[in-house]
Picture 1 (cartoon, helix red, strand yellow):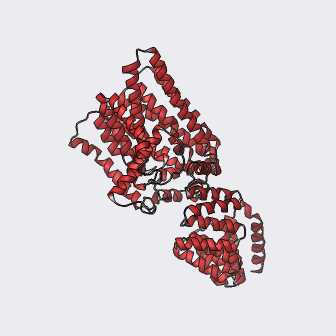
Picture 2 (tube, one colour):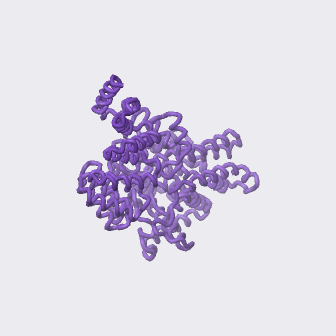
Picture 3 (cartoon, rainbow, N blue to C red):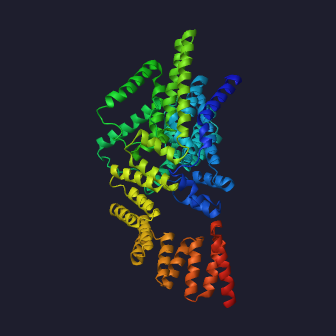
Length: 592
């Protein structure tokens, strides 16, 4: 490969990819997990040894991805909540991944054209918008960075037999698994490389891969042991073998269709089996199947390439199939297999069919540039969809108007900006589609609460609890509503129920303590405030309320210490309370 051709290829990949995703640098956070992962995540606000131990020793949001959380912590340490930095990190990782794809395909094929085509389509494909533009999906671009590096190391190891590449491969695999469990299929991918490179299947091959299979198995056990990490019957999916086959086939065909014709892309889709009924499969997927047949005929002498590309796709997307749902992000690495087949087809057409025909070469380039241009434009447009929560959910509702979560999430967006009437309308639409949607009842109850429509709020919280009796937040907020109506005994019952479900519910202890204070049961109030502080020693409100209760019982020394604790942990917006605490310390100290 000439140096000039290499430089041109790299520049083309970077230029098209950066241009396609440039809007992602001008957008903010959205209410699809960005609040949980970043803006309201206490784990990332302090880069201390204790927080790092917590990040690596526990799961978060139903996943084990400590390196992803650690990357957020580093960004927060230096840039706080500046969305540009988080989006820039995602984009830089994607640019690096596109170059790694180019490198890995070239090592595999020794073809500059195939490598360029695969890397370009990987870099600009509209289905990758979710992985790159959604900050909470950092785990995709991060695990892929190490995953692609692992594959490159293996190809170098196969060429040179040097153990340093084998050890580096293992190390990168560990980092990939610590970023996202989707890295588990790597050992199978390494076997695919052996197949593609005509390596003989023997005992040595198995021994060589054994550490990787063992590591993948361990992380697989971790993944399935996390509550809520796997799909199941909660959406009513059939459990028979035929039913599972039907769902999995639907998912795979859906992904193949979207990779070839990326239309009606969305951050949320109907569940498999709802997207399309079985009978129209013939009409929708027949062109796709015919297309693969044509590709097979083109590469009849290179069937191994087709098999490799398809198996790469199937193997790397396999961890997402048990979730029984569809999402663009699951195709980030698997799409390489399909792009590889496409790259081989283009190489075949150019070098074996049209190389000597100037007119055909011109037409070929026009078509190829047209496809790249369309994909790049769709990616540009798709990136703008993520500019804010309202735009994101408007896009889902426009394309798939019968998804209740889309209305509920847009309702949350309206609530965040104080438009509670619009929020209530959206929650109501969600409940019309799914009357068993407990979260929509809960959120609508919150909106009614903001409007001081407490009776309606209580009715919605009660409905949510009828559907989900373990909904601790619904008990807590219903307790708040009862408290505002001065129905203190009922409020205490609800706070107590919330604490039975979640014994570490700090806010429930604090609010129950406040109700006890109003009822002049000061010792019980002090007990609740103290319990809240045991769970969260930095909860300033609990310190302040405990100080007030201690004053009422004559425990002046304890009151002084509680006021001091409040001052140490108070937020800037609590300046008025800080002054009150200082004055009370002076008065109590002089009297004490």
